[in-house]
Amino acid sequence: MATPHESTQTPEFIISDKPVDYAEALSFMEARVANIIAYRARECVWFLEHPPIYTAGKRADSAHLLTPDRFPVYEAGRGGDFTYHGPGQRVVYLMLDLRTRGRDIRRFVSQVENWVLHSLSEFNVQATVHKDRVGVWVPRPELGRNREDKIAAIGLRVRRWISFHGLALNVEPDLSHFDGIVPCGIRDQGVTSLVDLGLPLTMEDADQALMKTFDTAFSAARE
Image (cartoon, rainbow, N blue to C red; front, side):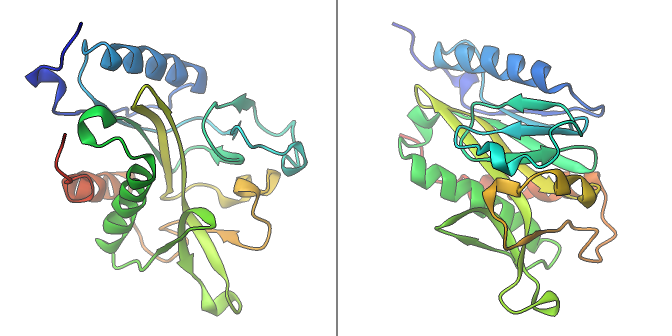
């Protein structure tokens, strides 16, 4: 029986500087997860962007795809409803070993949320999460009472205690591209980005914040 060894314990961080085809990304994750399960590969945290696409999670409602011919639509296999990916959005796929990090999916989701919150706090962005609404939200009282805009989507999948898929943080995407869906099935709130909030930040700035806060968010002792 395979057993873990030292080289599997430190995640490999990959940053792709060109947009990655979604089908290619799925194939990479499937192969990497299989190898992590078998202790043949290290954990992996992959930073990338996709060309403009819509992806459908396991709970996707077809009524939430408002303009199906606008961009390619992919079945994602992750949790959640429809979401948009495209240039200016930092997608991070988390292929992490919960056999050693803790076999608690709710706790893992909370760690991912906290990672985004810690990263946003590097830019003095006060964001929040909700038990009944997946994702990370920014209060926008100037736009209306109780208004919150989503700045990051989270959609995860776990196979034999190895995670994959991950999060999408809006740095500077074309926010009009979200008009073709009901993002994550939530009609009464909006979508925002770091640049939309008035922060002249780049993808590199976002990456630095995410890298800086990763260990803090995922610092719980391993089994």
